[in-house]
Length: 440
Image 1 (spheres, rainbow, N blue to C red):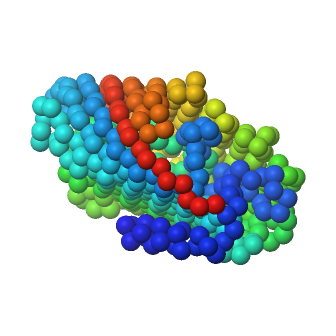
Image 2 (image 1 turned 60 degrees about the vertical axis):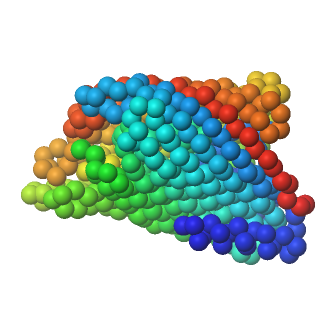
Image 3 (image 1 turned 45 degrees about the vertical axis):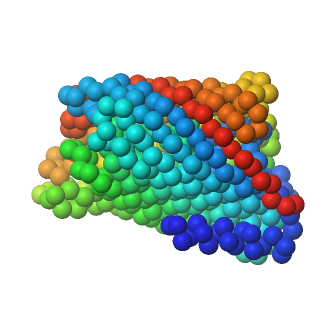
């Protein structure tokens, strides 16, 4: 992962004198281009932006240091209702490099967390993200993305509002259950290769993977991973309207002491996307999904189910709003079994004044076990969470923010959750950043 990140950064700087410096927006926002087609959210695999357009900058190198303190009223879960204050330090470096043919967004933020009372939970953290797009030719585009998070506490993220992104497509959950102070490593990635056949037709293939590993075992939660592939056809009806079809294959694996649990799905989606304004995107998709689900000692279950998603994104200069809904059959990240997964996500960010901004996120997910008679599977449950933050910029370098997160979960088979389903977290953060513009 780190080798890939270093290679992409070196490539971006090496190409500065070779390519045009015309800035180019992402595939989902250039629907008005008469030549290059957009890759709509149902097939791009990317999430909607979490900040308003006025807060974004391209062609920069940024370094910074953040310090925040948090209060959590349910740190350990279970029957140990322990509250504590933690202190977090986050150095960071980020790069956004864009040329006529390439876009690279790279962020890396290691950190360290110290607890005031429960010092045994002190831990180093890692946050790494890469999004790379390269136009191999006027008609062929390659996209790569990867994220890696290693943490002992899901609340202590460098940017809490980015912890629950709003997806533009129906995606399997990478983490179904939020376990307080559970040492975990979560890695997700994907690749897409698209070829524009004509001014109004495009085909593409892609692949995804995810891996969830609990470094220290948590009763009721299990390691899991998934991988899959896809192929799509994308047709432009007009400058603002797209339709198409997408086939997806996915394998989900959950690991427990008695062995491995596998679930396979095949899905055919039909999708429609409309760009009503340069800043507003609406997408819907749906189709049949076939699932092959083991339920030992009984024969495997073969099931047909409807699957689909809907999403909307408004990305303006001072406002960003995104929302999505999806229903699929999938494995549950951290759970064993196959589930009807229904999820809804929303986010909003708003510039209130030249130096003030606010944001909020909300998410809801419910997992219903498809094979309740299997001895290997775990029951499902639901998760509801919400966050809000207020930020003030003192100058171009120094920022301060305050925020609050509320989490409620219901999973009867997980003692860590069932005995303490609610968690509240408040934080205060101070950050200092320096930015260097890259040449145009």
